[in-house]
Amino acid sequence: MEEKNYDCVSKFCSIYQREPDAIAFCPYRISPLGAHIDHQGGIVNGMAIDKGIHMAYGRKNNGVVEVQSLNFSSRVQFFVREVQDEKVGDWADYLRGAAKMLSEDYPLKYGVCGVIEGSLPIGGLSSSAAVTICFLQALCNVNNIKLEASEYIKYAKKTENVYVGVNCGILDQSCEVLCEKDSLLYLDCETNEYEQIKQSSNMPDYEIGIFFSGLERNLTNSKYNLRVDECKVSAYNLMAYAGIEYDKLSNTRLRQVPEEVYVQYRDRLPDVFCKRTDHFYSEMKRAKEGAIAWKEGNLTKYGKLMFESGQSSIGLYECGCPELISLYWIMRDTPGIYGGRFSGAGFKGCCMALVDPKYKDEIEYKVRTEYLEKYPSLKDKYSSCFCHSADGVMAMQKIGD
Image (cartoon, rainbow, N blue to C red):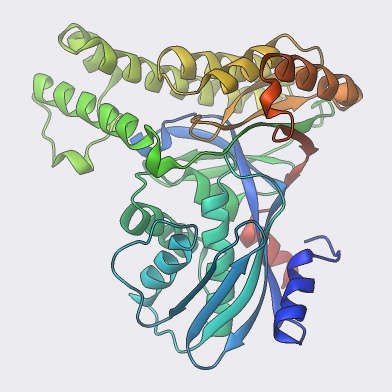
């Protein structure tokens, strides 16, 4: 983690009149290919980026968790061994949920006082998973708990699924924990097997462009869970038609359905389920083809697949809002952008792209100008930045060791 003067440290010192014991960090992530299929056991590509969540923190011997965020006005307080069963509906549910999930397997004696700081606007970069994993690091450190990579992923995912109520897969947590700088994470969300695909020596220079629509998103209030259910119901019906043994709906995923079964029984499904399923199988192919292109250093082909992924998200998965869709089409028509699409679930938030660094100024100007011509009311909320790939939490811990 780059050394600098973080605002969260200054705020911590101001509140507690002492230096923090440590600073935890979790990067944000992007998934260039593999959109909307991790919750169906799909194959995805991912990278951590060099922006994320920092938390300046110290131990509280009385077992109280006392945390505030520089991005939100409210402060959270709870006793680490007495987390309420029901979520409150604020940003701190990710902290409560993380403490509750961790306490199921590890005794928690000490609490944490801290200040959290996010380096980018919320929406599309998995800030919720980053907050959760950042807090888990702090809580584990003060309680002398050392987690394996699989445990960070498990507890962060359970926090979202069980406590917060978002039916996400393992993409976000895995990228933020496992990724390595200058590598592409190739992750099978059904088997949990993964590969770090090193950047080819033939790869041209690139940076990661992030374009924030100015609209924040909340997955619990979006159609995210509905899309997950539509995919599961499609899989459930296809397995029934084909005579494939199936479990309860909550354990059913499209990855369990061979594509030839879908082709055979496609006509029996409502059109909306066909769209979701078409997206799943086509996105699986793009993720596989993208991994090959990445190994070859063929960023032109990889970018083309990203644009195809974005179009499938709009037409087949039917996510996005007018603002995000406008950003997507502007990116497609901008020289210097290899490829791009919505980042994350695609309900508000941001778009991401792989760009040629030589064109950064022109890209920033063109995207901003054309977007704000269409949505002038978002002038004070729209923003963009350029960043690089980065190590995930476990890679950083290895470096620190």
